[in-house]
Length: 457
Image (cartoon, rainbow, N blue to C red; front, side, top):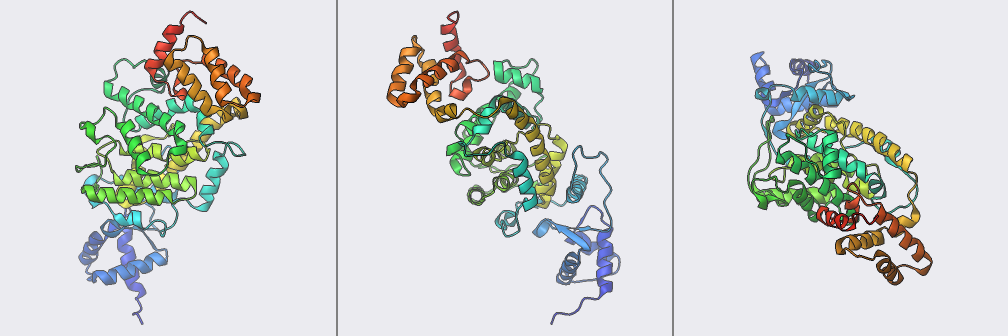
């Protein structure tokens, strides 16, 4: 039978942990005990710490060398600035821990157990949280094609997500300047080309998500192409777009060093996608992707942007309200990522995710209510509309009606042909700078079509 641990031994260790309100690592704790005259073997110390954790007298975060022990009775002082969003107790603990000077935070590398322990370590979102997100994020009842809701709010989503995701990277475009760039192609004065390119890349990638969602998932094709679009013309090495990185990278303001070996990066990238693809709940799948793609840092740059957009794949596929990250506070988001990087703790980023989703729901579902229910006829012939309108614009058909009638006679049931032809005519007359992309028309093609049709009504 194992030896019984004296309560006095536990009290001494608990007291030393309490002396570090922001948490203490094993080596630092051993040193503190030794300085107080307590000599204890590491294995014995670990056993006593496990007992304290089981009895809820101490809590632990992180794994392996990055494991940190935190007091429960002594609540850490709040950071100088209060969080702009409500945080859980665990989220506040993480915020306090990563707010310490970088010199006092223990350097850590990639911990594969953080990935490979899933799902045995439990879901990232508990059942109550998932139920809540489903309740607020579901815009309708009934079986509609994947991406229906996202297409309904695409005009607003393109602007919001392009701006919000870029803003989290330090982009200085305002929301209004972003709208002008996306809707009218007007680059803001005083902004460098890098910032403009970043926003345009977001626009292209979001359109890719929404228009190709039926073919997308957590696989190499989807994530690599998402990276290629988001990183286009932004990397020092253009060949790195859409490729697993071959060079080491660092994380600014963090003691976390990502994996550097390309073979291991490829291995864990594929494993990450396999695990994500096997998750049934779309919110759990979304948040898992946000956490693990951010943590792995599989690309030379643009990793967090890929993670944010990839987190929307399951939401769009299941016709849930998308997550635009609009109004998400940059500092709290960064602190949440640092908690993942340095402590392998997700609670603060989870607080940010849930709050950000609530914000997106209020923004987009109210807009959807104004739009009303989608037209079933238009939904049924959506792919046909994209093909016909796109062809008319690209080929510059001088007589649209004969072409549409001939096409409809070959592809549309007789009872629906007249209405389909009228719908195409309406769509052509409604084309403008802010909506032509939904027909997979390029800006140059739209500009040429508009010039040909200028003055013809």
